Length: 299
Image 1 (tube, rainbow, N blue to C red):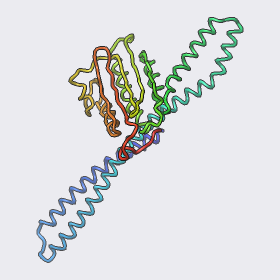
Image 2: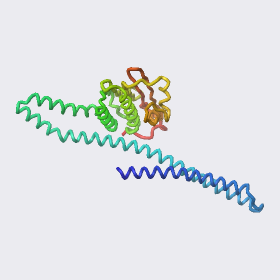
Image 3: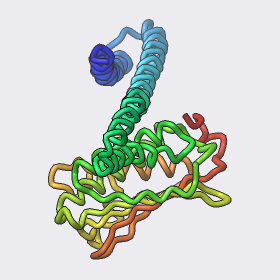
Image 4: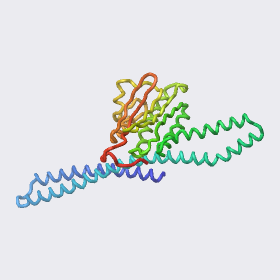
């Protein structure tokens, strides 16, 4: 993985370099062409020089524009690969957790059996409660038909547990046949959940509550992420979706912009309501998206 990340960094640098160099190339060719066209040239050579200059300029500019377009396209794809890497890591984490639980299940049964034989019923009951809590914490995340989203939920549940956040999962739909790639929907939910977790750091541990809701209706898949953190001022509720705008001290202001862009590119959207008790971000993705919007399938 480290080698892949290093290679991605090199490609990013190369794409930036290509954009800069080709832009300079366009400027330089234009300057040379203008000099040849309006500079001192013998009359008998004027027409030929102008034809050559125009042809050369056209070819070089066309090639440079193509290079810049491809470089920008490459940067976009690399951004998507980064998002997919995050999703894959989350899925690997969930898979390892499930494998570990399966591996330990027989051991748990043997421990409980031994405690029962020794008539240590209270100890057996305590042990079962601990094991049950560990198993149900994972099973709570296994509610949708999308492995990537399940993995994301599991990772965020672990993060909430570490931060002392009480989580309520309200998953009323399996989200089957989600019309966008799972990793792309994970990008939306991950940004919203991370924002909620960050907001809850500003309140007392006993008051830290987060709720994730996944539903659907006849026309769309819907979601909501609510937290009991500080209220978002009315004047900021629309501007926070703009790039570079953030209410965090160390934030970069791109998370909510990315969320809205991903959803709007698919014909959906996101909105926020906030008061002194709760802040909720809710949004949707249409079940039917236009051919121009559809560039992938759920995964």
